[in-house]
Length: 98
Image (cartoon, rainbow, N blue to C red; front, side):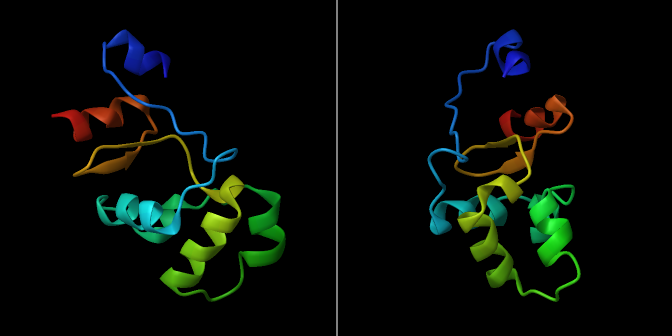
């Protein structure tokens, strides 16, 4: 957030750990990225490593798991109505705003 403020970009913060994303919102974010669903998974989380890592899951199953367990969603995600990126490093936001 400090990076966005430093380059004077207006943005809205969605705290999806507190206020869960709806499945259709998350699907739009995924579809507007050039990323695979697996890129949105925080693979270092205990829940992923202990219960899900070695399972063969469909895209729909992964989306359902992530929406219901938002701790597993990679962050930060920066998105507009047309494009989305996982903002690691923060400069990735330029891909959305340019």
